[in-house]
Image 1 (cartoon, rainbow, N blue to C red):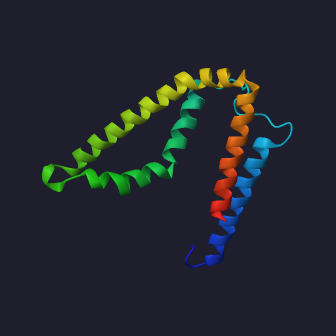
Image 2 (cartoon, rainbow, N blue to C red):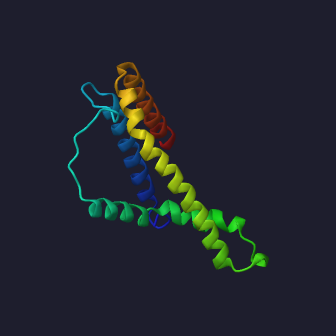
Length: 141
């Protein structure tokens, strides 16, 4: 698509730059709330949360890129079935992802509360996030 309509690439790129700058501004603008500040969320059913998580993962292109570009480097056609090797590597990836996500779930709330009670750290976090987003926007431009 980008080869057929090169201007589309530029439009999408500049929309990305504008969006990153908007996110950076929202992180530091006066009166903005931090992602570390407690927020009241609507109670959702476990089924709805599960479906949301499942759809997020199924529609995530990063996993497809991982399996297509990275995993083949670790497969050897002479070592047996490629299907079995793919299943083994996929299982390892799922186990590692599950472990990392479990640690995030267990500790993110505690870290957010700890940092949230220290206004100076919240301010640093907001400026750091804005700086990273701004740097990404400049790099993309």
